[in-house]
Image (cartoon, rainbow, N blue to C red; front, side):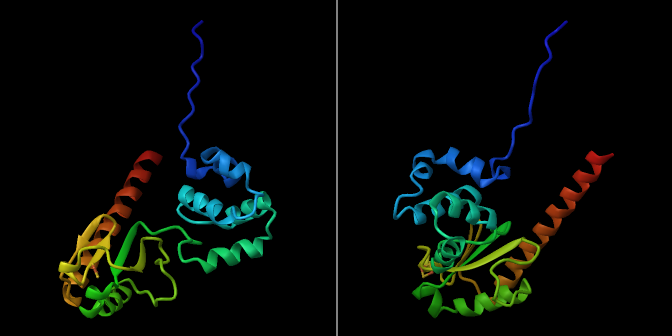
Length: 189
Ligand code: FES
């Protein structure tokens, strides 16, 4: 009889819980979690792993460091580098460096919020498709005002041009949803 072959589908590491994943990724750091001054590097390591810091991660960091969850949460909200929610599928960065600012970056931000029906209190659309951030100079000042969407750069924008750009990404997002739904329906047959 032939020997049974054992094959497990490879698991997306992000599906592992923090207790399982984080010490594996950076064992030295996590083994010294109780040392003073480790909280920020631990949070950076967690955010690098998951893209954001979930409630589950806060609980694990608190357990690993012995620092109360409320204090961990306080540190996360104090530093702008930390995120409490996953990034959207499309990350829209609006440059607000000097050259872009004087060329109307604020108007561009208003167009984006309007087009994505955001009120500026949340950085990500409820469907998780778009995250909007303002950033300092991204180094393309001759193209000011500039935005980036994931790896694409869009420069010399006017509100009208930008509206078209955002509509294009919205269509792209809707199309990829339809394709995913069709693929899921086909695999369920
Ligand atoms: S200020 Fe916007 S790219 Fe430099």
